[in-house]
Amino acid sequence: DSSLEHYSTIAVYQTIVGDDTGQKKSAINPGSSWSVALRVLHNAEGPAAASVVKTDSTTSVSSNAPPILTSLPSGSAYFLLDDFNHHHQHAVIAPSSPTQSVRFSSTHRLLREGGNVSFILQRCATACSNFHRKGPKIWRSEQLLLTEIETEWLRQFYIQGEGNKRLLWKWWGKAICQLFTYWSKLEDRTKQVINLLMSAAKGRCTNNSIFATKNEERKAKKAFNSIGDIVERSKISCAKECLYDPFASLLEDRATMRKLWADREKDHVFTRVGADYRPIPFPVEFGACNQRKKSDNDCIFQSSMAGGSPKDLQHIADDIRAFGQFFISTDPSKIPHETSILNTQSSLSRKKHTAIAEIGHNVDVKWTGWKTHQFGLEMQRPWAALALDKKKTVETRSYKLPPELMNKKIEVLESEEGTVGVSGLKNIVEDENLLKSINRIGWLLVDRIIEYTSKDHFEADEGKHLVKSDSSYGWHDRKTKVIYGWVIGQCGRYTDEKNRVVKLTRRMRSLFQITYGDPTGDIKISKPNENRKKKNC
Image (tube, rainbow, N blue to C red; front, top):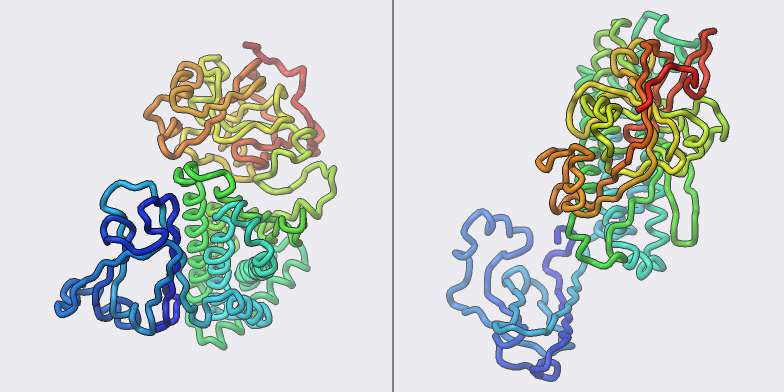
């Protein structure tokens, strides 16, 4: 209602189905069928409505005009003319006695300027035409617009399901595609601003040893000069407080928004509606630059930000704050580590058979790399040891194992016990952090998958997966829909302590691609040494 024109007429049309009382033909006694109730309440809506909300609304109800109740036949329309709705409350009253009838209605009101799709598209066009401008105010307006497009338009459309999309795409398709085009441009702009802020912090440092190449140093100095101009022009006293921290906060706000939408789309209420009216997955791929068309009304839109999950955005926000602090200190020993979310290149632009492919940290189960590379499964203590000791014969996960990994040797990467549902490893683990973070204690084969679709089925197998009913990993009513049980077949423990892994790269949740080193010190992708001593179980 916040986008509706004040003091405009409202029209309501109603139709009643499954009613044999005669309401289809003419009005009957109020109370025995669907009725409309009205009472006088000054400033019930409109600019002065807030003053009514702050007080007891019953004190504003007129005592000189008694409330009325009237029924209307099916197929009727009624109108609240001019400012009538602002000074009256009206409600629909269900029949007092049980009935099989159902009332459907549609309400028609006038939108204020700015509440329609043409206006938001014009705002997008204006914002994108001003990308040459830089500064905290313009960046804030761009980020707020990006969040508004996503949450108030795009996600609102796709949460209504495939049936709604088929019905409305002929009219809405063009507008939705235009909004996604602007959304992608604003995502690109976001990445550019992030890179500018991080490069500027490096450019302010006088120690040239932090740069890998002369080109990187030149770009960093240029970025620092740009930020310097903004600071001077905007009369900013502290770049961290006025540039870095506010931009990080905007990313955190978007992370919160995406988390709320993800929770909303998983709401149990959607199980009560037909499959055609359940939420459609948001059609976006992160880590690419161009729209990929699948059919006339089905497109996948893409963002150059290689990660867009709430966790990814929070990592980036933390990095920006750290670079803001580095901008102040310029101590080369305290230079932050840039998040891999920004450094990861698009999988679409990479050659198909690259040996070490930085193709992202949440790839599809259809990714061809599942067939060609070796992988490890992160398991926190004590679950890893229990699995290899055959005390835990089913490993439970919220996702399926990629088909290419079925009956294929998977390394067991034991990590420290930590927060439930949170990986103890970074997306990329290498160098000295590798030995500190994980212990490669053995291997296993998954020979089949069990789909637990009910609480009874899941808890009946407690002796196999060892997840107790009160565990955070257990079945939660109204929340859990399915848990996948990875049935462990053969497995083995490694008896030597030599760890030849030089790098781990997350590919899907707790599955990591493994990069091994050979005796010459070169890095290569290979399977584990089959001659390695192992103990079968």
